[in-house]
Structure formats: structure tokens, C-alpha cells
Image (tube, rainbow, N blue to C red; front, side):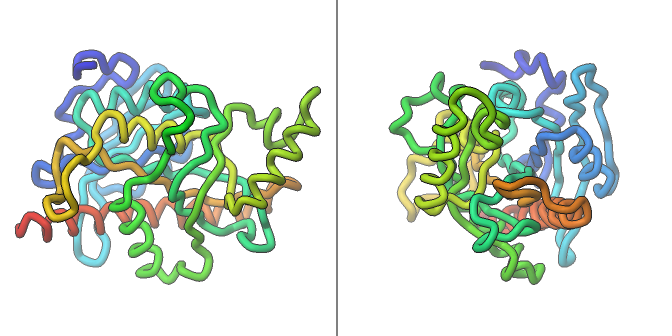
Length: 282
């Protein structure tokens, strides 16, 4: 796939440039409304119209005196839509991808509604990524992105309400999570099994994101040789837990968690780029 194939997002390589040649950090909310909310927080915002509502927004974010070039685009709901957007971003040169989404917590006593979840990996209960890899290949976040999210969360004082672990990624919200239809009993049992396995929350996009990063830009170097490299694609996820298996949380709680997830993602982007500068000695 080449840069000229970015048909659905209608941008070229210039839109992903930034951060001293390291490329923009792209935030990937599912919702166009959340993308607009993030874009409104950026300095020097530029928005590119898109008839499919996948507008690409660019700008700059500053935290603790350090700035980072950011890109934002809504991926839509579910892995098939995300697969199109992320594949085209990768084709034009995006290399750091951070999903900013929402989830339902599987255990509201351990991970209360209103918490933030940093995904270490995702259960592949979806079909889109089967076109990339067999089910035996795990979908995992890049350790650099996970470390940056963790560092930023602690720096923001969110450590007590931030949880790190596996999430569940599904194709059908109503069929699997809400358990509607002839297989409702099986879905209830399946979700209970995931909870017993220690899975923290359920959402709809992360597994495909992680595998797209892995197959298009794996890091095959030794630990000693690793540093920021434009050939390597790094992906991660932060989720606002806005409900549980019984239903939605309050709008106020959801709005707070979503706002914190956005700010955490932006601040983690700063951490990532600062680490890259240290690695390169610049």
C-alpha cells in the first residue's frame, strides 16, 4: 500500500510530518465528536474537511514546558472502520498511534466506572484482524506507548484511578456485551469467563490497531540496538470506563473520565517524543 492510496482520509505525507522528523503522534478516537473535542485543545489547529467525517486535525500540545506535534482523526466504530483509517495513516507515514476510546468495565468493584484503562493487550473477539494474522498471534500494545501512558498518568496524579491490563475487543456491541439474541446465554457466560481471566474492560477497536502496528512496522532489533526508528510503528490505547455490565454510568462521570483520557493521551505523546529526543541525544 502506498501513500497515494489514502483515499478515505484524503491526506498526503505532509499531514503526518512533525516532531523534528519523528512524525506526529496520532490520537485515534472512534467518535468524530471526541476528535473535534481533542482538536479544539490544540494550538495552531488545522482541520482538513472529509465527506465521511474522518477529518484529519493537526496542531500542537504543550505539557510541563515541552511541546509535541499532534494529529487527530476519528476511526469510526469497530475494527473494520479503524482498519481503513489506520492502514491509510500508516501508508502516508504515521508511526505513533494512540487510541483514545471508551469501554465498559468487566468488574466495577475492582475497576469502577469513571476509571481509566491502559490496555496491555486485547482479546481478539473480532473478525477483521483475522485477515492479518491467525488467532494464535496476540494483539499487544507497544511497550514504549504503555510506559509513556503510565508515566503521564502518575505525573497527572491519576495513579489511583488508572488501571493497566488486558481488554476485550468485539465486533458486536449488542450481541456480545449487551447479550441480545439467540446466543445471549453464551455471551453472558463468555463475558463472565473473561472477567474470571482478569480482563479489565470491553471495547471495539484495540486488537486490530495493535496488530496493524505489528505487521506493518515490527521492531526486530535487539534491546541494546533499539531507539526511535521511523520504520517502527508504535500503538497503544487509553480507555475511559463509562459503564459496566449493568449499564451506563452517569453523564457527569463519563464526561470526566473521557476528558481525563484525552489529556492523558496528549501528555503521553509529550513523554514519548521527549524519550525519543533523549535516545537520539538531541
